[in-house]
Length: 380
Image 1 (tube, rainbow, N blue to C red):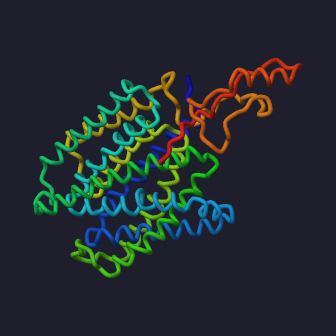
Image 2: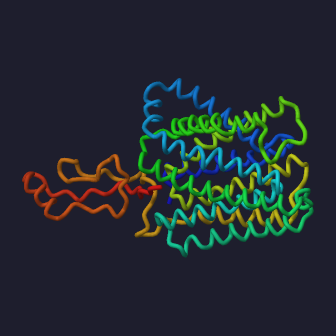
Image 3: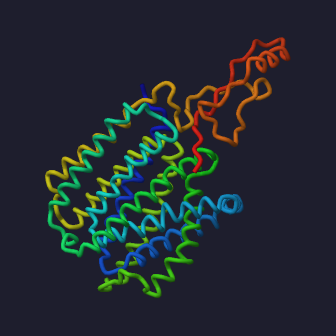
């Protein structure tokens, strides 16, 4: 059975987001002399300025969207962008990129499990094997990392604990963002993915100008830069982070979130873990150890297996089926309000209502009850 185009587009977008996001682990490695706050501020200044320019080109409708949903955009700017990446960069600089990537690598399973708990898309027995393969691959990668010798291994215990806490905090922030943003888009399917990426980027610019940039300029951080790399390298790196990783990655992720259940989209984030490792090893002109290669294979096997899982009867989809047949006209049978995402538990019209509608149209046979939109509402 062929996969519906909507699902295919979501899978491609989710995979692309993971490949782009993997660059977020590489750039800080190429900018070792710059503080975490400086890298984060530079990234989100670029993201915010691009978003501002795009919103200016899109006209009043885009600005109206920004005014209507500024609270959600601000929350996503902190949890999914500025706050998350600041903690990630701190982790990279304190305990190293590979170890941080390992911790961040738990996000796919955490998001998949939490998403399936909030709005079931797969029976737990069908989710268990893909999640177990992903965790096994992550555990194998972690075992190789923590038995190897890295510069971060010689850091003081306090420094390593700070890095560990930062990485775990990044996982918590981004998990909340992934589920809340997916629920937001599921409830508002008319919002374009690119426009919402720009709206969140504008909110991220406000956060950056209000907090990160002043801290970076004043230099009041507990992790000051030891040396100053070439300024051109810094500008190029932060521009890549802001334009490709932030705006492009958010656009791809919004596209995937609107078309896939959180369970499937969450496991696709594993692509970020594998690509992040790959980019870092490529920059170092090294091959990953054999154990890590096996771990990558297990992770990708888990993703591939998850993509073959079909939604079981009785488990709601979190996307609107593209091949759903239209229901009867609204003047025949009441249907759920189109501004709200209707889930599979949406009550069907009562039998009496159907009979009254049929009686009012004696020339027509009674119509079948309208189906819900099939998109399970998730509220942050």
